[in-house]
Amino acid sequence: MGKNNFSRIEFDQRIHKTRKAMEQVGIDFLVVSDPSNMAWLSGYDGWSFYTNRAVLVPIHGQPVW
Image 1: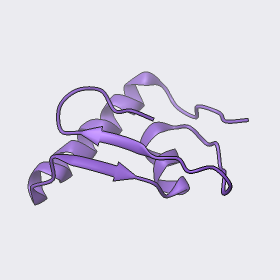
Image 2: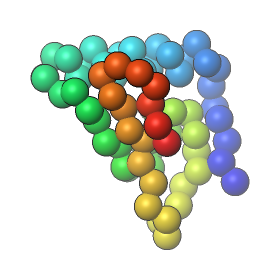
Image 3: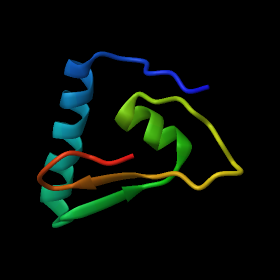
Image 4: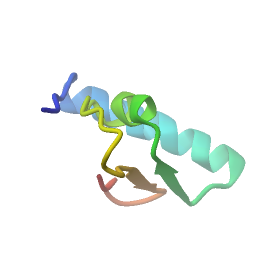
């Protein structure tokens, strides 16, 4: 079962940091599918190799799991 490993404030900071990096290289929409990167970005540690998962990060709006 997955587990959220940090606060909402930490989540918001990580999303902000990711979006700043996206802006610097001209990315409007980011698809994160590596489990370790999804865990860093979202705090959700739900490793699974039999189910496709991704975090979708638009430059504006809420990320989607």
